[in-house]
Image (cartoon, rainbow, N blue to C red):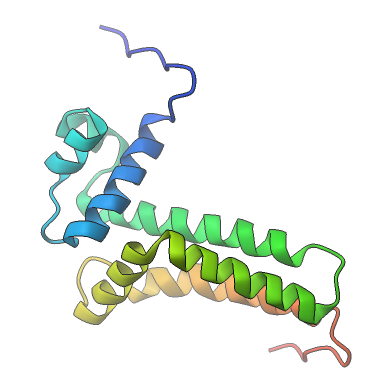
Length: 151
């Protein structure tokens, strides 16, 4: 039996799973959310979900990685314009607040997971956040006078 064809205008299954997982984890918390409920929200069976993600923990990690990738794209977009540094900083801050408004449950989940020491590991957040904020600092620093010293 072959795989079903992708329907035009419908996001890839992986993206639909990530969307459903973000919503479910945000609503019910990590421990209370089952892979079966996420699969049902996407309209697939749990074994099909496991084809895309090895485990619930891997799914949570993918949700967090996607969040940081989206945040980075938005922040770098805001900082890449040729405005004075203070205006670019204001744009970046506005983007950050917009992201917070778009993902409040996910941000709350990340904090609660880190505090509880559960499935989300602090090392992952450091791996994702440190280079992102270093890039933000570098982008802002290149137009400040005097420039921000390295480190």
